[in-house]
Image (tube, rainbow, N blue to C red; front, side, top):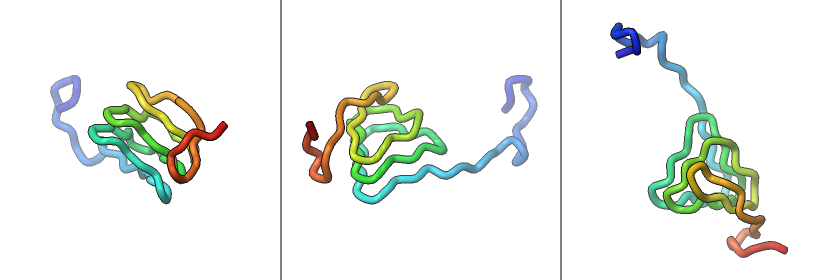
Length: 79
């Protein structure tokens, strides 16, 4: 149902791709919005809401998910 009370049709639907790259990790209960790309070996903390692309080798968490630090392939902090 639309805001004006009329029924939705297939013309109201859009399809977009969400991409999870090699080695990424998504914490339990996280929400990934449509069209977002999670980079290689990136980590998303549990319960996070991802609203934009996450670069490779980074740790993000929160609502909305925010950059925490750069990480290596094992998920350890990189200085």
